[in-house]
Picture 1 (tube, chains in turn red, yellow):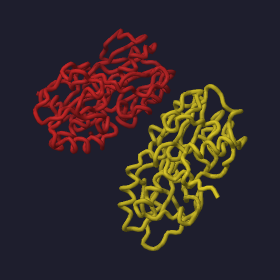
Picture 2 (tube, chains in turn yellow, green):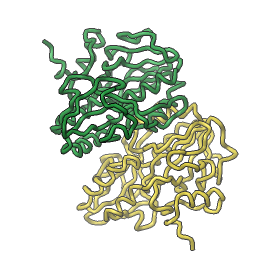
Picture 3 (spheres, one colour):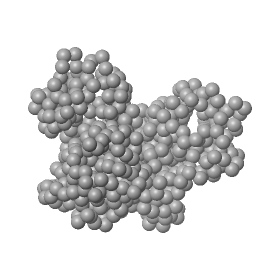
Length: 257
Length: 257
């Protein structure tokens, strides 16, 4: 059986390009940063970039591709964002119209790709620091919640901050903050810890996305900004045209994680 | 005599708006971050923002104003970038055509303002840490050099990295790096230390901008990315229309420095 965890990003992207790998990318090429993808026409790109600049915690930008050029030449030279992700979603007027293995047929000369940092990066740093990550231990998707914290709007882009929760043993909370603070390219330090109701979460067992995590005795719920935010906001804006990765099917960069 | 160092940003900006303060802003409202200003038509703004994202050390973006809206609502609510800087430069086709006290007559609905971090912020942090800053001690402008390090280009924007040099006592070099690393909004950690020829500087006494600093025995020249870079690159791009602050006449934000 092939061990995808030890593959290089180039090897995995090559398999994906040939459509020989079409699963989710969790745990693949473990030592490298993965990225969320949003592709927009140049017309909408400035406003989206302004939204990201104003909301760096949920929207850490790793790279912006030149209009019409599908190569992310700084984070993965030689790669192609039209073919190197396992699954894409196509939206028209805010409505999901297609889910495809490559976007060659949808590509146009005015499209700009945004690669945004992903929490997989800091989760592996937490584990290296000896801090358990419940959603990895229990093999489920991170519990995510829509909060009452508003993002700073930019043009058509506005909406609430979405957070991911990880239960952290109370004696390791400071360490978890210290470790993730170093990852400004992957959501950075948490946005809240403790009482979920303070950020508008009524019931911690009712997630808005993903699956609930068990909070054990002596554990504190810690909330990090989540990369679902920019995608949710972009979908909400009902733009004429947008492409994103499909949930869990990320772009694997050459950046050591 | 009025002590401008202790004024609040709001007080200084109000005087500037009334054109009752028209000097350089060095040492004014000392505890607050100052910013470089570049104003471009929306048409050019995306490319400039991509350049900044690719070159965060010389181009730390503090705020981008909404097209047509002169209020930097996050870094200085209530302020107006058309009137609240002491002196502006107007460029057409890359040529300086005017230097003015306000830009009301040049303002248009498609203009976007970029506020970029400035080294004044980290110089004050260096001094608080007990590290001498030669250009402040000797009351002259930072020595600046065009290096052989190329910025990552974006569309029409490309050019060499410009650096500012500060001589640091050798036993304080690590501390200086540690302190400035924390200021990612103001050029962050240095880009080089020691031998100037390694980054293409032939003669440390021949500056490209500013004035030379004396390097004393047991001092190491340390080079930080400089906010002149994006302005130089924008001028070089010969855009149809651009407004910048005049050198030394910065925007004073409400951000504690």
